[in-house]
Image (tube, rainbow, N blue to C red):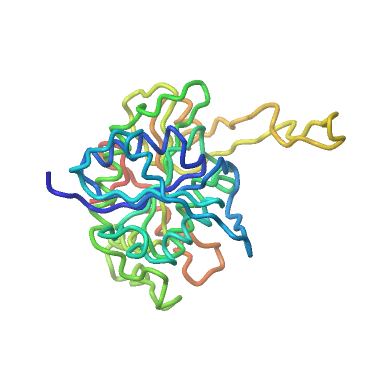
Length: 311
């Protein structure tokens, strides 16, 4: 089998997570060389948190080759854990240079996940899965985040067809080593800034340069439909309860309300569709934040429901 495009994998559920293992297996079977660096322990809802000035243990996990039944004659795989957050993992992976810890692998794309539980609406702010992808993009590596959008089961094969198609289509755009990895050209690198350029190409350049990321959620039961949609409105009620044991508080919503806004990630996921949402990497006032015109164009879907500019 000829090797396919190399990928960097991470997550927030940790190196032992079933969703990450599923992703490693299906992508390795398809011929992708893989550089894997994930948190040593569960790090859900860690957002963009960093473990500053902390000695983080970096551990090679060759034992997982046997656990995951990886083909020894397949493409190269490097699997490590870091005793830190998802963003710690992404920064260490990129800043140390893949050549130093993942020989023969020069990733063209970061894939974060598969997370256990949805990352829709306001979740994308708190999510460690999305944050790991965003951190990679901040460093100039194109990125997507993947989540199983239910807690009712842990069958991570749901929607795998859509996940693999999204990765394939993303690699049609991220089809070479990143041209601005480590952001050496700072805010001067704005390949999407040429207003004379066709809009679809401006969107592709935003994704290719890491200024736009993609967030995919698979439903409890898949209808077979894929939609490219904006974020919806989700509200968490009863977010704190008193803790009698420690005389403090426990954070965790008692109920969740999704506003019935049609054609958003919340409503479409609840309808059983795989949902894909383009997200801006940078804050709105940052010099590299893509204009609203590009974000709106990124929401255009093709006949199959995938982002139309992924070609």
